[in-house]
Length: 343
Image (cartoon, rainbow, N blue to C red; front, side, top):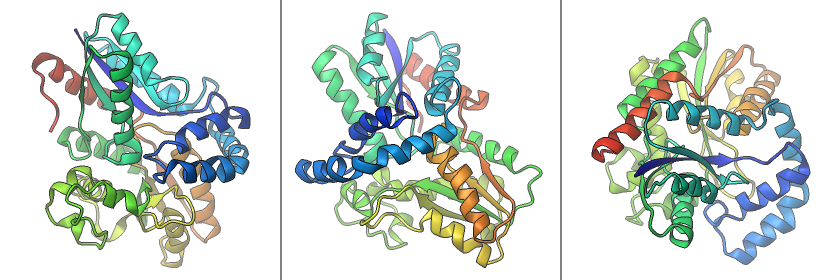
């Protein structure tokens, strides 16, 4: 019997330092997030970051926390429930980090008689710190606890025409009635070394402005290329003016080169160039979360306006919109019926 496992990032149990600390510990100790040797990672995470970060993160979470709980979790649960109504298969939701574990979700599917699972990392792009870590963790849990379950993974869907369409039309709705000077596609940042580590050729990815435009097998696992590709696809679909669109990367850690340009630097730069009415889109995420609701919708707006900007609008993620649910439901049903995965 077939079933579906949707997996998103995860969340602390509450917006308190007490609950944020173990969540951050699990997240940052992931070798695909902070990819240094375990001894050094332990010093960085437990000796430095966790001494101050939980309190600051808890304050940020408290700004965006919903009555029902973490926005990311609540939205993911709503999305899962809607997908369930569009398929005959069991559908479970797990998180890479936190108490809603992948193991519990696989157990839920097994208890319903599932022995073949479609794993769906809820990330449009491939990155070792998001998509890859979900797949690796799921396979580790499967091998240890569910050896008789077969897992097939839905590929990154950043360029899937149906996804580009539903994302673009959501953005078009968000642009209605807003007289913008500029549109910024802000993607989640990753260290530059992650790009090179994910390059199977070990020579193509130079992060020099040209490699992302030169065809290569490396693009299958190149987050930077996939972000640029998605931006171009949406621009083409919506016929957006070339001079009014750019992209950047947010949420970096210090003391390391991360993908550029940095989103916070762009917020400072735009007003100086006369771009006073700004729209920001966060297409690395399918569900709104701390990085979109607090970092971009709140902190980004404040930074932009303090730098001299004016009107500011953050367009929400697809969340549990009916059009997005229909796209995902078609993908999982196509897989159930004939083993077909989206291109």
